[in-house]
Length: 250
Image (cartoon, rainbow, N blue to C red; front, side):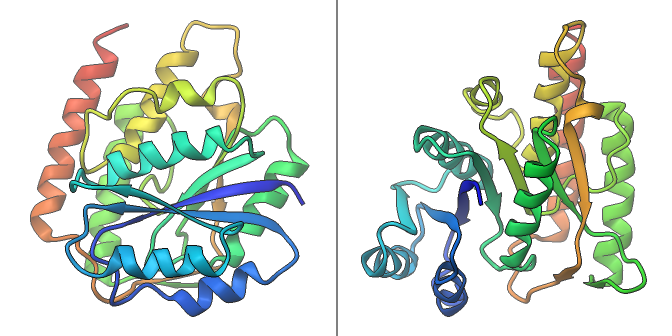
């Protein structure tokens, strides 16, 4: 199997980081390593992930940000560090493991089988035979947001906000993460906006050809989410900022 570095942004996750699951997953015969980005946590998160690193430094690594910079910046710095590790793929995964770690292998298998793909996005589609559990309010508000994001991007994407994504380490990938994100809340949308801007009016393969949404087999809402209702309003504002920042350059 190809190699991958998966970035896990962490802010005050010490009490709910499932250390046993991470250790069990890395016991398998694959080439997947985890880079935990401690985003200025004020609890024992750093100590927890440092203990993981000490137990298996080949599979677990730590990037410590002294000040809290937000998930977008934690992911951005983690992805750049992952690219520097000279791996086949980099990605990011929510620390609560709402998406099971086994899905990483599924994403890699899809990417290996289809070398034209550059971005694999987890999509929380509730289908028969799939184990997708979302609170109704989150599901419906998420559908409204996803529709708005799709319209703004002019891209038929179903689920921009799932915290499970994988990127092929191509020569063009670093450019998507070199600059800080305009958005603090919906940087996932901004990644796609940057991809669209970079490919627009170019001879490179267009986003519809290189981005693949993979319907998840399993996804569960996990208690303790730091997302609040006011964040949906902030997300809507960030969508408008993304549209202004990228679309006005046409």
